[in-house]
Amino acid sequence: MFPYRLAHAAFAAACLLPALPAAHAQTYPAKPITLVVPHSAGGTSDILARTVAAEAAKTLGQTIVIDNKGGANGTIAAKQVASAAPDGYTLLLATASTHGINPSLYSRISYDAVRDFTPVTLLATVPNVLVVGPNVKAATVSELIAYVKARGDRSNMGSAGAGTPGHLAGEMFKRAAGLQFTHVPYKGGSPAITDLIGGQIDFMFTTIPGVLPHVKAGTLRALAVTSPQRSPALPEIPTMAESGLAGFQALSWHGVVAPAGTPDAVVARLNEALGGALAAPAVRQRLMEEGAQASNLHTAAFTAFIGQEIAAWAQAVKDSGATAN
Image (cartoon, rainbow, N blue to C red; front, side):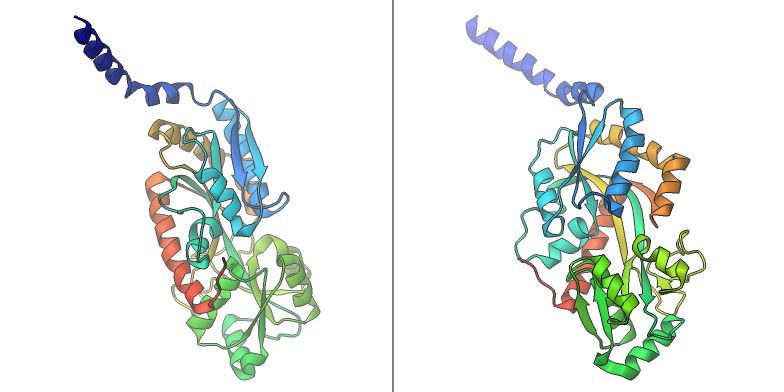
């Protein structure tokens, strides 16, 4: 009888296994959730994460704690979350860098942007804007192209650093318009913007919030945004496609991903809460102030989006010659 009892117990235990994830999902979340943000506090990523997290927490009934983990273009934060337990309590604010650019930029990378994560929701896209300094008289993209072609490599473009979305948007611009110019990388967007205003560089691609006050004050001139549609933050500024470069798109973006293997029911619960947060008028208004447009692509569509981004940025990285270890 003893072997029979062992077999019976094993069978009963096996029958219980499929119920464990479901039981976990029914009680999720039972404690605070950590959202790891791959940038320091105070920037667009941090503001977006805190805004959406505070609203989503109302639905989840648990606090979402923001853990700012900047450095190495987001690889430190991404590796932390990729190595976390797949239980829905450690999430990553994925970006165009962590899940678009880095797979091509780094010769050795500590995580796999596709295999190590379960995409949850694309929260928002943030278009870059092409701006020129006061020493450049161009008022349109076509006029800037003519200006750069006339000057050759005497023209220079600034960026927040090699391999950043702004730098690679410039490489896309160079390829699309058949240009030659010198890239000047800075240690962050602020010093680049300062030199742009001062006339040390001619133009740059950057996110809208950092230059919006200068555009409104007239110290910088916005020529085009890099999104498929115009930005609500700069509705009068055309897109790059409208300016003659068909198909041009270079977005910064923010989404939420979980470690690979996170239960489907937990992902669905997160989708519900994050989608509800993005629908809140106050959240949408705050995102618009940051130049961001709410998106809310869920798992399947977000997974496809990440694949498209990796492919698109790979060409820009190749054109730029940028690498990182």
